[in-house]
Amino acid sequence: MKRLCVGLIILSAALLQGCSYPDAAQIEQKDNRPAIGISGAPSGAMLYVDGLEMGLANQWDGKKTVLLVESGTHLVEVKSASGKVLHSETIFLSGSTTKVLSLQL
Image (tube, rainbow, N blue to C red):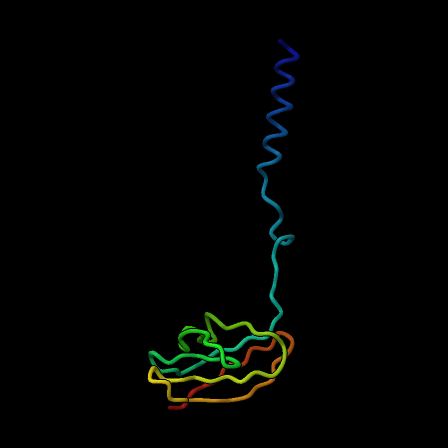
């Protein structure tokens, strides 16, 4: 009986060890890619980067959310819902730079 109790204690300790959380510092990952934000985009305007549609421009506000891109030169365009180009700019980004484009419409 004594051996059974000792065995249960060891088994319980082993199972509880598996339930511990890892140190947050060990699992934190930071993305160091450059990012783009759009400020002042009208409702319904779409963001295009290098000809690819990235979604509604105002969702990438540069404060809460940014669009991560690869380092290099990018053509950034904001188009109205009807397809009219509201802003077009070629930018170079590298490192962990965040570029927020302000639309003055």
